[in-house]
Length: 284
Image 1 (tube, rainbow, N blue to C red):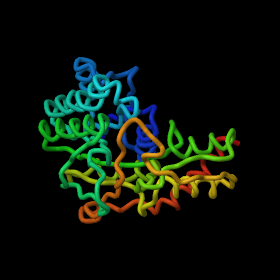
Image 2 (cartoon, helix red, strand yellow):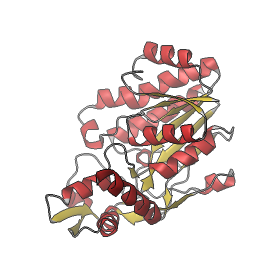
Image 3 (cartoon, rainbow, N blue to C red):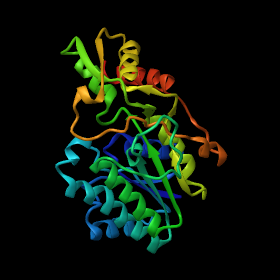
């Protein structure tokens, strides 16, 4: 089997390639230098030459605040990009895995979102990712849409690295305490995606590490696990004042995973502990 993975310079794409290679699966990793997903001809040429059995599409425009001022570019990457890939996958009759996000929901309420719940994005980023989902669903039958949230990995930028870097220059940090979700370690997530892509159990899934916390609670856990002293001040979303709207409720139900024979990811605190160990090994 051969799988083409997009966004290999990012956290998830990097770990997905590593996991597939550990399993002895033929892998073609691409990023914008090898395949510009916004260019239909580029996508067509690269995928046809690679002739994979599946595409795992990890590449995305993820700068949530910047997206509010760069809607056209964000849409080209997050909506047109998946459409370009899905079009070729349909023509070649190969399966596609589209990585999506909790931002497709409006973030209201407290119950976990189910995969089939209505999507009502409240930001440019969320809207364009939802449009990407719709494109895949419109063009393909053999697709996985996997919604993830609060991702952290060794390769690339993330909240954990931001907090630890701030601790080098600050003794106090303000963190939002009224948004709730589940941190997700790309190392764990990559294993699940590798398990999933070799099957024909298509559909929409949610995949995060188990457990729920606020960003404030997550930050406190990061400093505690890293052995760093930091004064963490909880603030509301309104007090923090981000440009783009964030979902207050990013809880997502993962029951569909077990219903289809897949294992849920470990608890997020366990994942964070393992990540900090790996981070320290790389930074020492």
